[in-house]
Image (cartoon, rainbow, N blue to C red; front, side, top):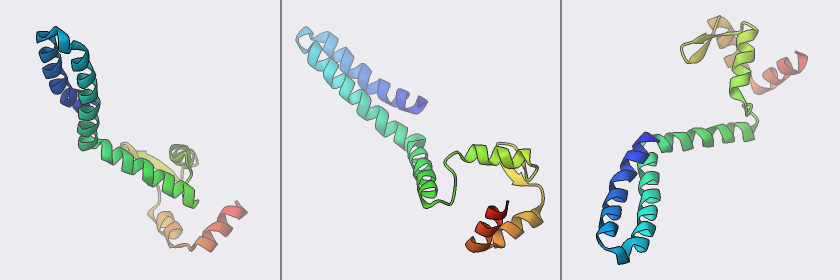
Length: 119
């Protein structure tokens, strides 16, 4: 967001300065300034991390739609942490026991579904 604001400020200032020099162009200058502001902000924000945010949301929607991950992934991880299946490590989570991780990773979809239904 910060990069988008900084990237948008330069064209905005140029248009405002030109508009102030000519009173007749003030209204048109403001319209151009707002258009340039939005365009410049969007391009700068996308270039400096916006695309990663879009990819992240698209991945979450795709996983949720496929039924392989819940929409509220943070709640799932916090519940697993409360049940002592996982632990917080920095800004993420890790399994307490690597054997449990390997066991769960080795299950087929059918075996995993059966395990979930039994719980």
